[in-house]
Each structure stands twice: as structure tokens, then as C-alpha cells.
Length: 261
Image (tube, rainbow, N blue to C red):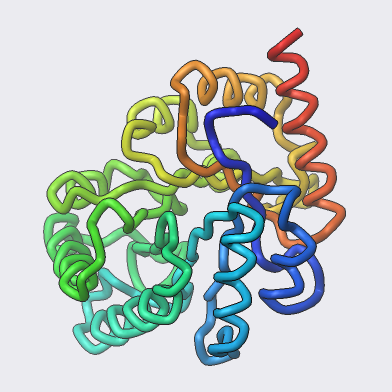
């Protein structure tokens, strides 16, 4: 599409595995977000990884990796934090042959999303920082680790991101769903944002749906901002169904046409 940023999709657009999705998406997008949500439910084997590497070369793809969801890097229970560190490190090791553009991690307020706010924010930050540092100690560059915006005020975790030199994954769909000021957050963090996850929220309140549900004026602002800043990261259409992907890709294309007209 001749834009400075890379347009991406997830590895589960079609009801099949990682490789069949990559084969169908190659040439249509520039980056594919490899979803390693649950390592216990299966991961790409060695042969599949080799094929993914070959497609990366053939189609000039990059990969981003979404590390497991069932982790609690800032839990007040040490056993939970240690398990979370181990799972994220396993995902990083597994995906290493893909030379990912970024690894996306979740840092929950508690043991899962939508948990209550911690009573001691400073202690929560120390726990989060300790877990993230342990992940960095595995040998990964701090700039390759992206802390994702979730269901809380991102300023809670920004000092940790600052101190460790981490990158950011801004989920515009989450911010829109939760009615948080996505424009302010994007402008404040764009310089260290490697991945922007974009999706709509349907009338029932379900997110990760087509961008046709994302407010058009806000969508236009997003594209204008990324082009104006010559953003060179990844803009992922973070949806998980073919119809949502096709509609979202059409929205992005139409916005780019408007921008150039």
C-alpha cells in the first residue's frame, strides 16, 4: 500500500493452523502476529517453524509474537509470577527462529484481566519490573518487548516501561472499548510503539471485530497521525475471523485513498 508502516493480521484469520494462515495471508499483509495464547494447547512444531521462516523470506514478511494470556507477571503470589516468567520465556524461545519484530506481553493488575486495582501501586510496579527484568535476562533486547495497553490506565505501568527501556503495543480497540483517551496515549507513546493493534467493537460490546465499527473520524485521525509521524512499526488488524479481516482491510484502504485525494 506504499505506506511507511507495515500492515499486519493475526495468525488465526482462517479456521486452520499457523502455517495455512500464513500461506493465505502472504502477499496481502506485511506482518503476521503469531498467537501463542496458550502453550498447553499446541504450538508450531519444528517443521512448521521452518516453513514459517521460508515464507518470511519468500514473501518478505515480518512476524510479531503475542505471548501467552494466562500469565500474571505482577501477581502478589511469587509462584504465579514465576510461572508467568517461564511461560513467556518459553514462547520467546519457541519463536526465536522467526526473528520477531516484537514480543507482546500482558501485565495485568492482578492475576487476570479486569482484576481489581492493587492497593499498593508501588509494590505492583516492583513486581512487574522484577518479572519483566527476568524475561530480559533470558537474552532478549528490551526494545523487542512490548507491554500492551489493557483495561487500566497505562500510566500505572509506564514508569516500568521507562525504567527498563521497553517498547509499547497500543491496542486501540481496547482503548475504544473502555472509553479511554486513545489519542493522548498514542501521541505520548508513539516514539516507542512497535505495534498498534486495531479492531472495532460491535453493538453487543464484543471487541476484536471489524473496523467498520470503529468511529470513522477517529479512524481517519489514526491514519493521519501515523502517516504524519512516518510511523515505521506494525499496524495489526487484530481480528480473528475472515469477514472481520476483509472488512477491516477495506476500511484501511479506503482511509488511505481519502488521505491521498
